[in-house]
Amino acid sequence: MNHAGLRLGLAAALALSFASPGASAPRLLGDTTLSIPQNAAFGGLSAIVMDPDGAGAVVMSDRATMFEISFARGAGQGRVTAVTLMRSSPLADAEGRLPLRPDRMDAEGLARLPDGRLALSFEGDMRIAIHGRDGRERLRIAPPPGSDALPRNGAYEGLAADSLGRLYTLAEHAPGRGPTPLFRHASGVWERYGNIPRFGTFRPVGLDFDDRGRLYVLERRFSLGGFASRITRYPAGEHGPGPGEVVLLTPTGRHGNLEGLGLWRRSDGTLVASAVSDNGFRRPDATRLVEYVIPD
Image (cartoon, rainbow, N blue to C red; front, side):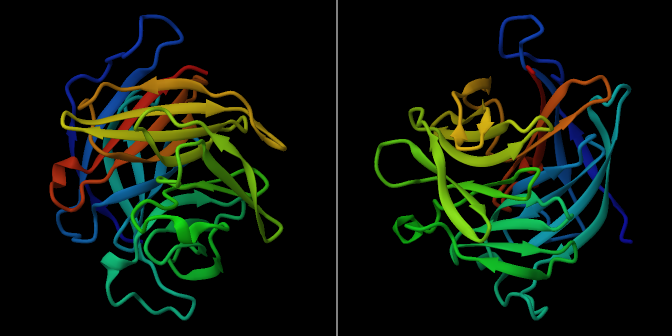
């Protein structure tokens, strides 16, 4: 097993709330800079799958590498105090071949299936693929119908799996001005599971389910002042999502380019949303883990 320490930079404001005080207000648990100076592949983090108890995660670089990391936390499963790299797995095809150009194997979404395998969504060569923890492809799935109308850099960034192993995805830049189609893959077939309303210029970039089967959508908006993020929770019925509830909305510029989303629960029962930012391999300090305690 490969172990390497990660340098941490912890934001000073670790208890900031963006809503009025009270039990229903989201609360910033931590904003942590992650870097592995000796590993040039680390960065460009576009997706995260959290362990159910927040003790570790799998993060995905958009340059064809998965990283398994573990967290040490403060008392009561609080903010992250240390991070250890447990495993680094370059993505490979079904024959075990590595990509000639890792920067063109643009993985954007990540979901853990009940059997432990990982599902990934890709832009560029648009597809969904199932990979083992070793990074090798086990199964390739064609994208949902109509995907040829999507821009190469605006396809399926959000990916989630429910407790039955069914996959859910939606495009960052769906055509038209109406709601964004949300697709579900079950029994080998894509179906239109429902619609996610559009909210101004926010665009969906992350998906996850919590331990109660509720679906969360992470969206981002970019302006001259920087990025804003919001997380909306939807009840997931058998035939489509119910009405959404916004559980987090950050001011513009508060955080960086948050893309991946993972839900987990602390030992005291509180629910935490963890998000990773994509630094584009330009600023190492912009590769961050941002965590909020959110209303449940």
